[in-house]
Amino acid sequence: MSAAERVIRGAAALGTGLGLTFRTMFRRKVTVRYPVEKLPTSHRFHGLLSLPIDPETGKDRCIICFQCERICPDRCIHIEAEGKGKERQLSRFDIEMDKCCYCGMCVEVCPTEAIVFVPHYETSTYNRARLLYSHEDLTRAAPKEPIATGIVARRRP
Image 1: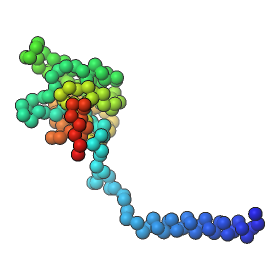
Image 2 (image 1 turned 90 degrees about the horizontal axis):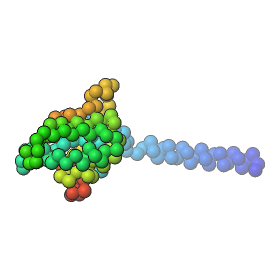
Image 3 (image 1 turned 60 degrees about the vertical axis):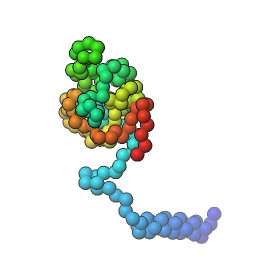
């Protein structure tokens, strides 16, 4: 390859690169100013876990079947109940989110959709103790309509 051919090829490559730069320069910007603006999450997003309240009864949907605690591969869900039979009451429902791998198995196995994912992804902290969510914290984080649901009913946005 002669020197003239190399110069011509180099100029063509430079022209291609500059053309791409100028086309991109005049396009609409897609920058998101993160703390102020947030991108919408997918309906299948695995974010923070929460316990929604049943709007008809005003109580937890949890029937204390311990399925989510049993299936959790990280053993981060802790459930305790008081009483027997129909009078059984939920006394503890804690999730250690620092151990959670967000696999979604607890959401899938729940027969009453008592545990769901919500589109909250800002859970970083410097204190590990703040990543232990109690029953009150999980209930407070629950939305009116869950983003990702289990196998009982598949909702589409």
